[in-house]
Image (cartoon, rainbow, N blue to C red; front, side, top):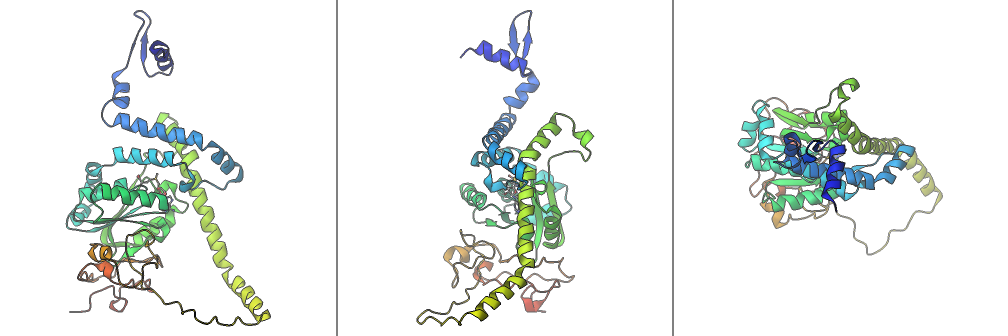
Length: 377
Ligand SMILES: C[S@@+](CC[C@H](N)C(=O)[O-])C[C@H]1O[C@@H](n2cnc3c(N)ncnc32)[C@H](O)[C@@H]1O
């Protein structure tokens, strides 16, 4: 390999400067800062990994453009997800997270005393883990629609030594599970622009908040008007948006539409089933099969025990009993802000997860009967 020929290529690309008088190539300080020093080099590495993965996924995007079906996050090649995570790991560490929260009235103090945080669209969990590292008394959940990312996040939490206070579950942003008493902070790191229904997700987040708490969005700094984004940064954001963000939003929106259509058709389908059954002789009960028993719902963080999962019914396992995390309400009707005078129930001895989950709240208000508040003194 000829370094001189390579340098000419870099000079033509504008990365190195060329002096015709001396025939020398130099690396300008500002380029060195981005490529070589500090986190800049790692950011460039992460971006290049993502760009290469986009090239690899080109046939997928071509089809998505032709059909309009979108490309969900989990369909992208693993290299893309690795690159995206590497970018966050460099850009959003515990120090940056604490600096972001300093701008939110009183939230950092609540987390310092052991508040609760939900990180929505947590990916591989890098910002979620950074939150736990910045606030070691806080209870932190990460939720993501992609089960593969959640599996990676659980491993990352174990490797970072925070698995006892960070829990990861598969959940879509619109079905964010909520613990008794709500969250002190709900975060979206680089996620809202990826969502099929950002308004629905933010409404759910607002309803999941305890009184006086906050939702924090961290988003790429783009301008609202197209003409203000016609610059090198805008070129990058729009490129990523075309290939990565908008296709995910489209895929989720289309899936939600399909679910809504199926829900709307449910009475008609039930009618058709009844009609078919009426036309057939009733099935004879099979002897010897036990009746299915309702298993209590547990808020365990094990694979397959995500929000709403019914696996592992009966007595909670040792891990569930040890957990410091309170139980989550399964995704159901969104909670409204808690009624004034709400008194959070004291945690159960041995950890909240030892309790079966209650039914999703049927009403918006806070009710001791529902088990949400402590009984009056
Ligand atoms: C750009 S990544 C950001 C990941 C992480 N917050 C970070 O900063 O590293 C966007 C994430 O949003 C998740 N996501 C996309 N749509 C979602 C939805 N409807 N509900 C929950 N998560 C979603 C994707 O699976 C992906 O992990």
